[in-house]
Image 1: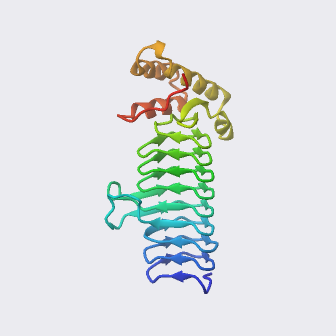
Image 2 (image 1 turned 90 degrees about the vertical axis):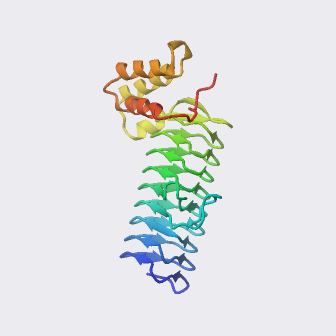
Image 3 (image 1 turned 90 degrees about the horizontal axis):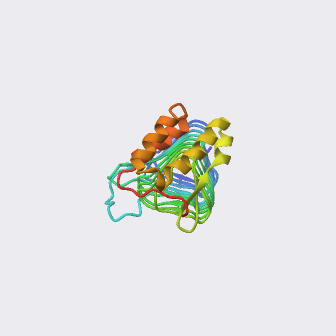
Length: 260
């Protein structure tokens, strides 16, 4: 169903049972999968692919050129997964040639005014509260929650099931299952609520709590020594092993540390 006031350019690929509401604009290189709904005043441009059953609300703008001086009109892409809910005034950009694709997973919820910048990789089951924003080249793990008006610095990673508090500026990698808050983000424990929602075993939650203390205890030797000790102590606790792998892959990026 395409409203008479909508504009769908020749070349756009529109799936079955798609609803395109009043005053929407869909560009020639857009791919909109089966069952999607564009409520009204939605702008989809660029080489943008939207997964099945995703619902997009008014004034969302998807697939616009990246806000980067390194972009020169190349046909890079934005790929959005299935069953997402994209609320009013959300913006997402295509990538630069550095990666070629900005990617968003399945079942994500983007609240009003949130933003995904160029070259970002966003996992599945992620929630962005109102005004939460990513700078370029960020990596956001599955089940992450970004609080309202929070911002993530470019090239920063936020691990699986981490939670970022409202109005928090994140400039260092946040470990999986971590809870980060503050004007400049500091680790403030473990995202217990998120782990309970995912029905993790109580023993796993306690293990992650212990690990979050052990890893950042400067009296326990160097970080490589602490990582080795944690890995050996909790070999069968999957969330702990994910934290270890995440931290070993940090490279030269800073890590978000707890408050002193």
